[in-house]
Length: 210
Image (cartoon, rainbow, N blue to C red; front, side, top):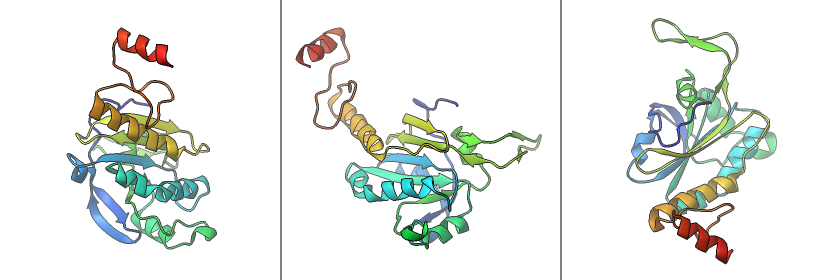
């Protein structure tokens, strides 16, 4: 897996379903630059088992992300029509009805490839076309992107391992704390706890108090 932390998040324009049912053809994260943090997360497939639990979990705390100036965006290699159909299904039937944040359709797999979360054997032709020898889907990748469009945190889970949405919120808090206070966040830091200055004296002082 490639490390994107500290680098510009790969730009893309792709179809997406927004507001639980509206299909747009040219969704891009560029609209958030200078305005919002972005939590972009990839999931393997629509109409599966672990995936809806994650999508509903993000929706359940969407207001908390919004309150922290953060946009949540999901992405998988399914089509926008597949996303739309899944969004019409009730939760008790395995659907994701009620999810309101954008779900991007990475049908040609290039977004997953750019973020280096694409599972499967594949290559590019001389013409630049991506070709595969088996089914390609995305790992459970998550990227926290700052207002300048730079990746500040990334996490990649294997397919069976669902993510902790509270940890995504914690990382948003940590980034915001650092940007507002200039202090770094020690192990197990959470909102409301002390930070420390990035110096030997700052570390010694923090450890003496804790």
